Length: 159
Image (cartoon, rainbow, N blue to C red; front, side, top):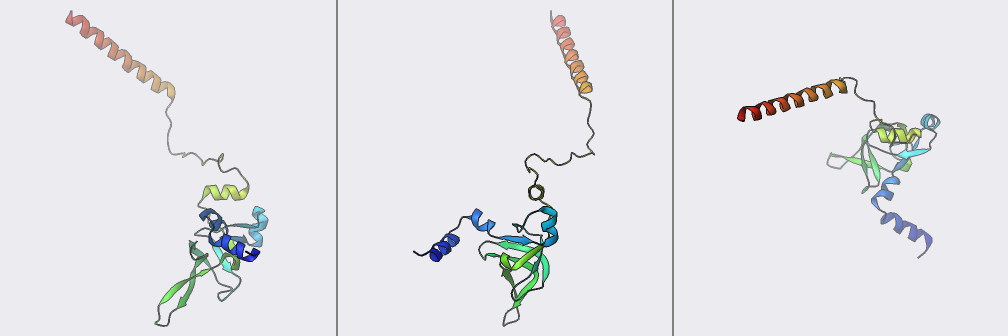
């Protein structure tokens, strides 16, 4: 088997993890300067711009990332059928540039910023009031003492 055929076979039979990592796209110049990275995996909700192909110049949000179709679906990118119906077009990630990121995923953003995503925690909710542990301990002690007293009184009455 020659080299090209071997590479194509590896791509075709790639695992889910490898195939999904191949669906990463290049960052725009502004995002490159901000994060110090050249590319990142594309996720639903990212804003992208098509730079090559039939739909070049189109901006939009990513609505679906498909491993089976080996591309991404972008809002506003559709083709017409002969009967008049429209269908989604999947564009390969090498033909697009990421202009805006979906920041919902804290893990992804921490990883992109160079922080360790495992150690960074979300801020605790300020609305939840905390009781002093001393008050709780005092209440539990008094309830335990009263139950002991009641039990000893019952035993004395029975005798």
